[in-house]
Length: 280
Image (cartoon, rainbow, N blue to C red):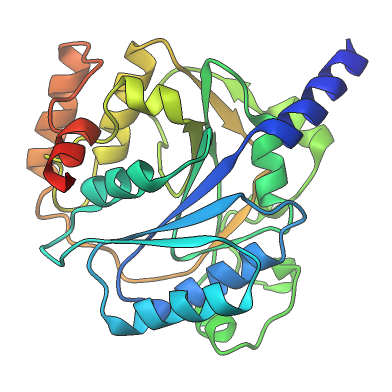
């Protein structure tokens, strides 16, 4: 059995095309660190798509510079700055993606050197993956942005969720689990097959303002038969501190989430297909 699993892993790693989608908005200093952590991956993604929710010229220039100097294929998916529209931004990026497997992160999350390799290793038909993160403090974030750091970041004394920084296949095997719920759902470290995303029409573009677009997306995935796989001690990322986004839209977004739960929704009308029509 171990041999068969190892053979599956080798075939999967070789043949599966991976797209890394990074959400960003007007924080090029953080995005630069994220892109640098991608260049240091033991296994590179086949492509990177920046889901840009309306950033200014500085972000465009950063992405252009990386495309000229790195071996990573980076696509810039930009939409007009019209408020917090991360669901639409992700859909727009996924439309551009050519990968079989989509990994979602935020533009404020530095990646462990085996991040992509770990996600490929944990990919499994019929499942989406939710992994965790390590939280930097405000002071640590300032130090990292100023270049006053070295890997591994476990040398930082103020790390929150420090246990999440442990990289171990053995511990991951023991503590990872499969359990369908929406507790702790966050698209800062989520992965799924593109076809599973398309089968539920992607994210719901009706979600505007911070919150719950990721949970509603997962509700429809689970309702459609795609189960949740929680990964621990693998696919590690380090999240930079920042002020919290406004929660002004949370009540409205909670209502849409509850509607998806109560109606056992599998499909949203205003999703990828609606965006594709608008783009054509």
